[in-house]
Image 1 (cartoon, each protein chain N blue to C red):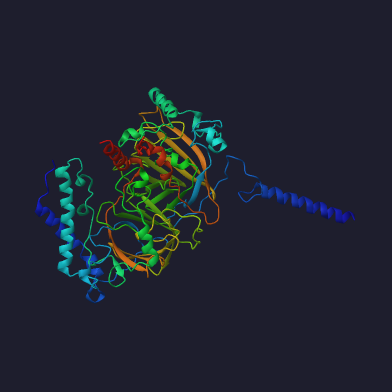
Image 2 (spheres, one colour):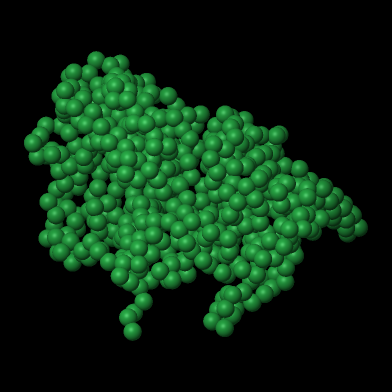
Length: 293
Length: 326
């Protein structure tokens, strides 16, 4: 009897050692992951030897509402929208918790926020002076498109990486060689990309000045330049960082950072969010024929 | 006022394009008269035939064959040259007619004319190649009744709903690829490991076609450009599209029964044969097929931010309201 117990004790000890060893191993361990931390990771590579970042990705921060910390709020017209129209709370994604505005640009941000629901459509650029462009279904620009609550798809070749957004079918073409300055301004900017180890670095400029960074009125000028870094940190996550530079609006560059999640639903694909029809009444009802008295 | 371009410059443009276009014209000729060496397929790093790059679908060829040609599929050399020259001249005259009377708009500033946009001559008498008469097949009785019930063209504009889906920036239609003789008939093709992307400059439309054999969406979801699935058939990319939306179908066909099949084959360095078949038994007695030539052009494609800058819709409605006040 004593011998058998001894055998059980030895087996138990060996078992404990095995469990301890497997806890110390990498991603295959049975430990729960720690938020904000990723073990070292080498991504699969494409035929060109570069990391393969293709697939369907989505952000789950609420930065589209406000890049900085924000509490839950009622949203527009709560008397009809109730909880449907309310916006959730979120922790900010700006390093240092502050956006370094020039004083006059900060005043403009406040003005934007006060007028975000004010829509005045004329057949010229004055249409951009008030109202959140997201409300009007205009292209979100960069980096806002990255943290809109919609998926996007990355399709990758050696010369080009395309990012197709479900929101408004907005497209970004990243030129991986043959880098040029933007030949014309655009809503989604002109992007030149390169690999820095495992990180895709995308340098984008040539923006129209009309996009906002969020619903809180954070804004930029035509001097905006965004340098993004996309780093695979697990088979299911990219870590995303962007440095935003605009000397006409900010006193220095500033950074945002959050993870992107791989959409894992079977047969996931981009659907359509063509919001243009949804905005017609809002934008054009003032041009409608009025019934005669 | 801009100086008119020298007429002999225009003749030189035509001559250069006709000589550059000869590979495309020869490639389309009936096999017996073609002496060109067969294209040897270049492959992407993933082993797929390479369709990538920038292509224009501009041509002066009508969708349906003019009746004078009967069942003749190809033009003579002289006819090719005459039709091409006439098309160039038309687009040139339209530009300068515009700028002579309305100096505000000069299409040459933005290189928007066909003659500046890489239009090539096309030896075909029509884009439609089947039925053999090059014309759309007869409509079914159901389709005729549907046309009879259709809304007549609007003459008054009470609101945005009285305007077309293009003017409202909802969509410019397609697939299939548009193939007019206007501007922005440019397409960019990119091949990833298991998706092909077709980006149309007209309206900045991006179609992403999976090649992994997944099923189509259910009938309950109808994207604005339908739902496409691709596969390789030898060196030809075959794209099947279903799930069309009712207001966005070729020739106003029936979205519930429509199937579109596109076939893309690279036939030489500068040319893709883009062949599409429209199959809708509730609209036409039989399927019909067209070939649109895709000719290589230089990139890039520019963003077409239609809705963001939609002055046209505003101006049309403001004009209609102003007219009412008279």
